[in-house]
Length: 170
Image (tube, rainbow, N blue to C red; front, side, top):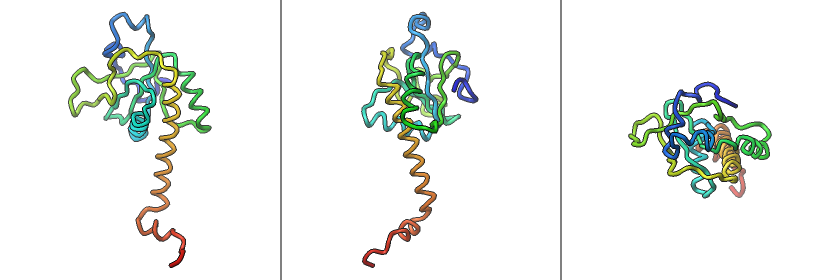
């Protein structure tokens, strides 16, 4: 998916802390995998807890989206691993060449619309496991949230959970 809807919000990739004025032609643009905030925060937590490789990530509080930065040439790798993990596609937006992403400023304020979850500290090196890790965690997090939602629908109250237990030795 490319540059659809509210995911493209006129901004500047050129102002990323690791990018200099002439870096755009030498290294290529970054790409961003954008997901809804609930899924994105779950993904961020899982990536961080597991120690899996991933780059900078940010949150847009107004549109309630989370973006994960990948290298510019990772779309095929990301979609390949995503396809291996799930048959029906998990909802995401891939913002690559020709897209613009607003990034947080250098001094974050607590109520800023755009905030870094994991700020960039240097130019991200090529990391082949990163797209695979991101695709795997995207699918796993989406499935976990879907299961949690199904549980809430099936057992809306504590009583309904207890009532569903089999009568063993009562």
